Length: 137
Image 1: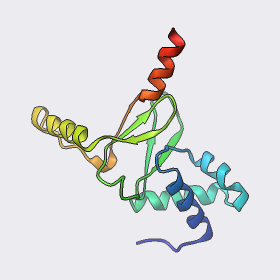
Image 2: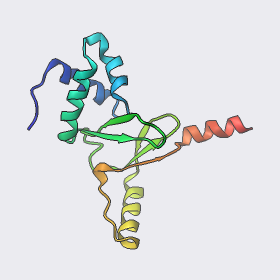
Image 3: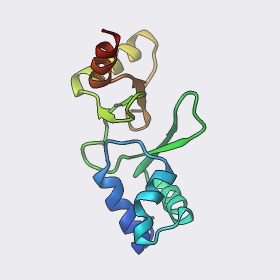
Image 4: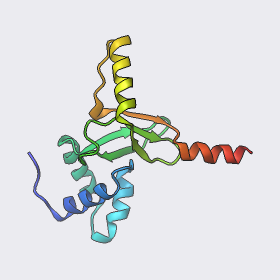
């Protein structure tokens, strides 16, 4: 069941919606919303509720103790596999064709069913790869 639409929840949802392609920490959200008088405890409380409702996904990155949240309630996020860049932190939707090919291959070769709503693949995006190549030259 959805919670009441408090000022804090409304502000957090608006912020998450505007940053739907980013994995953010609760501290980053609190800092961005601090001018609106939203505390870190309000951010955590609302994130816990939003996670239960399936509107945000929580994850952690290898080598980090930080917890990141990704807004998944937008229609373009439903049933998408996500690709997250370990360099810049940006999260992308995997192409439907590529995702389906991967899902089908795993189902056939490993008899494994992927939960698309809860899957993030980590690596390096095209832009960061290009920057890395330029620095090597």
